[in-house]
Length: 466
Image 1 (tube, rainbow, N blue to C red):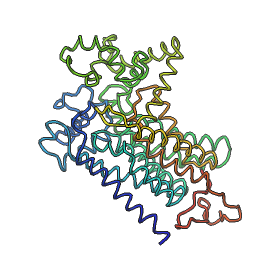
Image 2 (image 1 turned 180 degrees about the vertical axis):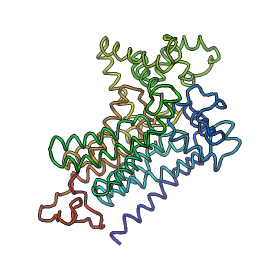
Image 3 (image 1 turned 120 degrees about the horizontal axis):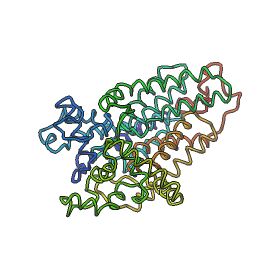
Image 4 (image 1 turned 60 degrees about the vertical axis):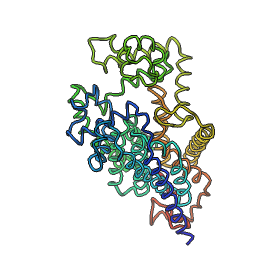
């Protein structure tokens, strides 16, 4: 009974997680539909009805701005359970139930990841925190890619954890790479992550001059598989644009807004800074609140400075100019803006499109959760040098760095929070665990696992990291 108890409690946590998400799915936040939500809906309907990706029927100017992961999933929901109303307003009711199931799966994977690294009780704690995390539940009620991104990212790390613990199973590294590829096709801001992780692991082996070939093969396989998954979409997008595009062409606008110091590095700040000119050009927006004005119209003002270039190329040029000009002429203000964006990303919580109130208790919980999870991840890695915790550090660190340069919103922490929470819980347990004496370990029988098992029968996390 003692061994079964955490799994019995896990069933309760999963029921709680699904119940909370199902309530949100039944009452989604569709009183306000953001531009991203509407675009995802248009793409999903176009995929299902016309087998196109933002074809003429959608009247979309730049459909390739959005990666295909979420639209494809939403298209499946629409195809199976859609209605005529979904086709009219692009607000697909089935999407919210898809996300309720997916987020429950994210809760289960948080348990699985920490169970592999530490044991069932630590996994149960991680699942409870993830399953009741309000912003993740709230995201179920929005037609966006964050819930799917969170699920795929923690799924990739869960499979990678199995791969690291059973190094002889190369197919697990390939499976983890495929999941990373799917994650990138949903959340393009994570594009370099699997390649950075593989490079770091191989680099450590080269520095130590130990097991270089044995380390190179699995990690290179993971990176290569991720690249193979990305290749077909990259070929399609590049062919459509007539130039090389890794996954999407949305990075130029994000980089421009993120480096536009007068706007504070935010889309809302940019629109506010040029609001007078924006409203003068578009009198139809008189009486409409600034946040509801499409960002594309604001960006068009800057793109028009380079009529000989495409919109994407023009914004890239303006972004490079911003980066050089403001970082050299106003370096202190520019660094403050970057720090502000990092705080905005992690110390604020996602409330949903059009929701402007802030809950003080939730804000406190967000800050505490990020600090404790981040510290646990760092302490656990320092104490144990665990490869999985190192990979999580690379992911969290890179994402933070990139969003100090491009656009930063609290919404962007949602796909990362389950991983941060799970790895933080695992890090604390690993850091506080007593290391077994050398005599207690039997490396000859199972070299990648500690032969001393937890009370539940789960493999201990004190096995040597790759």
